Image: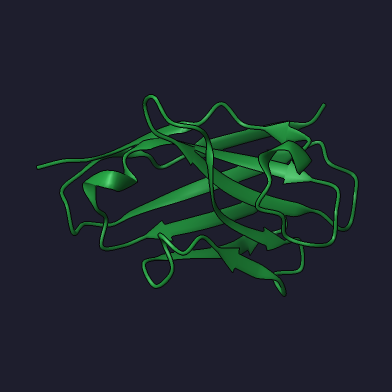
Length: 123
């Protein structure tokens, strides 16, 4: 059974950092994409970053370039290090997987989703 679990969210002051983790299990494919998305209250889900299973393809949304870093911790865990956080980074952060080879910014291309982890940036 496929399972995706996010962790690491919380409350942080502006300018602070958080590290999110995405743990996947039950997948039996060699090549896949892990994507991070976020959804703020009253807004649509937006793309944040993605990485392929080999770590060779990475993409970021313009809003987080230079502040967020995605990486593979091991075969089953993907990290999102978020620095210089701003109040507008607040939202529920979701991890998702698709059985492809190329990063995608489109939420509908992802097959499996986690339950999300709340990130709140506030003083």
